Image (cartoon, rainbow, N blue to C red; front, side, top):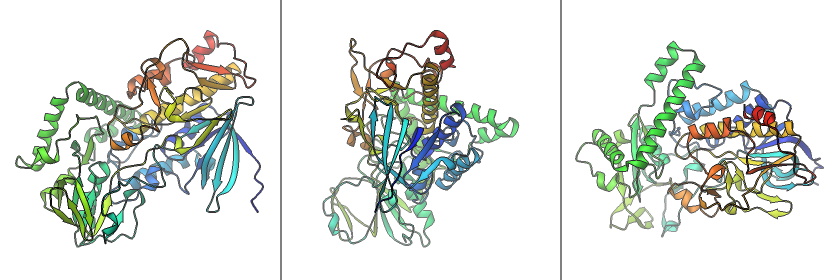
Length: 511
């Protein structure tokens, strides 16, 4: 017999205890101390991505001065950090600020329904292996559940897969007892995961494994030291918080400059990346085959190679890049369309993620099912016609946490504004008298975004409906701009529109 679980009510329910969820807990406690909240986490540990992914060499592909929280300086020497170090940082943050006590582990959130008459979300979750149902109620639902399906990664359907006699592995669910010593390993993919795995598997096996990276399409790559000498120097002479803030903004502005340069002068950036690769691999390497993508830099995420480790194992002959298409798998490996065959004992499918919006949650508003693929986002974090509901979705062209921090701050500001004005819910609404052109939500050509186009919302072509993908502009929009605008409607549970905020209230909310 199922337990009789009474409905538990909180002012805010946060879904997910990764980077975004921990940040949400901090800002709610700091800025909305009168609001009750709980964090529902499906797994048994905090950390999200950094707890789930355990493959060899797992590390950040952004510097930790921007991937770290704005409120808690990253103090380790390495700016490009390994997964265990990041997970330690997140655990330390949760404990330091008392956030762990707010987390309900093993709670898989499945669906949520909004009722405008009571201004309440009813949230349905399942607990444990027996999937026992439990129900929560809240006024505001904040989805901090990441952007991909935690249950399974993406693996294409290749001909002959059933014929392969070796071991299949997807990095999202890495078997900790996998023995790859003295084995022929084939890593399929060309993104950050593949580029991380190749040197880590070569260096981690004794006797050494031989690792081949098979890519269909090349990726732009750039090397960078894992330690930031300038940052470490500043931290020796300045207070830690000041040094962290200066380093963070330096890295933000440098990244924005490179991104804009890639969009306005792509040929110059291509040439720069080519020269840097020649310095790593020599002038005789076949760059046109292996390092010349059919798109411009930053149309997909630039692949970071810390301390040149990927290039080192290629130079040492312990690994190679093969650029080709798969014709079929065989018992002992793979046959390519060029006719070449690659022997493999282990095939690692570093082929990407299964992207999903709002954790795959089934959502209804006043009985009507919501398809996020039909919605336009407001400030890239709320949806037209969906009240008291926000998502944390980081940047594609910069560190995730930069926008996660801003999103959490904005949600707190929104809650405080509703408290000051005596309103119960906030809902963005598309203007009835002005045509908003729908544009793709993210201007990115990565495979996992293309595969999920029908799941992604839209952005508008103007104003608060744009997805800026620009941290300095988002600082102005989310932290400094007034909460009130023509698109955001504040209403009471009875359904009657609330009186507009006066100028003093708007000024207070904008602080």
